Length: 497
Image (cartoon, rainbow, N blue to C red; front, side, top):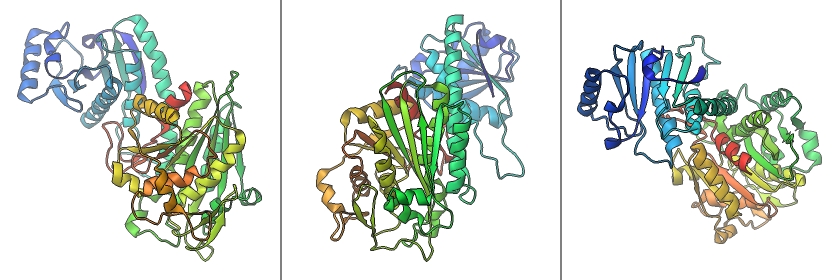
């Protein structure tokens, strides 16, 4: 899709679909449209009233285009109540509605009016990102490619200076969309073709295309054994496909003393191991590496945006499978920091891989650690399918991540690391057990387990089990399948870290 910006008005645009975003209720008045004939404006206002179009978020109204234009149709999309706070997410939602409407009607060229005084350069970035996410399809395995793609979007600005600023923000949006698309493709690829080796190859390709800004190291089983990664290797031992421990390093071209570590869960398929999942629960388990996919997508973006911070990305990629070599309930393993772990449920494997991954990255002396993991179904019970659970040992860092998430339009909510629950993961025979003694608060005890391996470093844990993989559309611009959740938040966070 080609996205351009210019100073102009809807009537002179050659696009097939003209789009006007409008605010809710009294703030919406079609009579304010300049250059449109009075008869068309009266009919548009009458249609809006008759069809209860008030400009709420998610609402749209299709109208015949005015005769003065070259367009086929005119579309009103709602932004909700006029407010600067949250406007960009409202713009993203409206842009998704615009794109899906155009696809449904077979219209391939669009023009969107952002000349109103409430729209800034960031509004164009929100539009550009949303339409690219909404236009995404995963067609690798289709013989026929039924999806209709949009050819072009023209954004109309109030003046030439704003148009120039919008162009820079659109370039940024295109870079971010590229990284998110990479993450979505990785998650959507079936586990037969997204093994740990394939995941390592995808990360290697990101490094190769970075012009030397990103370095990669991939450790095999022997090297992980030498590093005493007993928790990670215990998960991997039941699988035929070899595990791959991926370490990406982004070094800022500009001098900086800041270093961030980002760790992503990389279980490329989770059968549950000997604690076998029910068949229905396995259907989407190719997505259990979505945290790792988000890390790879982030590094693709870092190579292009070049933020002033050094970043280490670590993914302990493996499958969790069933065989005669699988780890057994009741076995005890030792992580690379020396702590012993009693395995009482082999389906609580993600925290084992994260334990060794986080211990490994501590040697880089990061100022902060963020991990992303499709970790617990309990998080979805608590927060549903659309919201990430955030846990942290550092309130300032947690606040920064939540602020980044709000800017990015990704929903997150802080959950407590309740100290009294720590005793629930005490083992009778080891330092820890990998599941709690209580059936309740599973997300919190999983966070407390991971905290045992951060060595006091400022740390944020993101349980992305819900929004990482959409079994129904999560918004107007994010359809079913892998969402790339977390990438947008990480970009916003890294640039301000």
